[in-house]
Length: 207
Ligand code: TMP
Image (cartoon, rainbow, N blue to C red; front, side, top):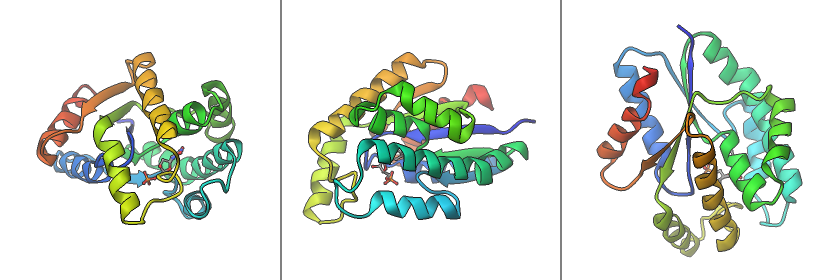
């Protein structure tokens, strides 16, 4: 049996990490070998690059440098973790992946989708997920940033402007529209259990 590669995407604070764990538990209970991981990061080298990306002043990197750093982190993560796990037949569940680069750097950052895909081709052989689950909770996204800002615990991306984050949301919506085979939009409203059920339904055809 070949492995399956599933990614979770969406704005900030929509519960991706919680849902990733719940989905992993549900798939594990069905007897599948499941590997969970995240981006930026997921391998020691990529986690080191993550710290460069997430810490420091909001203007620390240009959109171009950011795109290159994300592509470099992803390259290490794919080579050391994702590909080996897929080759072993595991289900790899990843919290963010190439679509975050497309939406944040490509869309909101203005780099363009084609350039991001060129970097992805060079860094990671263009590896795409079998399914990308877009957790949709647009209104909550902005409210969450406001709350986190009040608490003073926003990372570099959370501190970017409201219009940047609107650009991210817009780009995710367009990506979902243009890639209907790979993408499923999943309503992130409701109880944790309800959302997990929706996510499972959105990958049922791959099981
Ligand atoms: P998170 O771990 O809290 O999801 O934070 C990761 C942040 O990095 C989030 O704001 C989205 C951003 N990001 C990009 O801009 N491009 C990327 O390729 C990835 C993976 C994340």
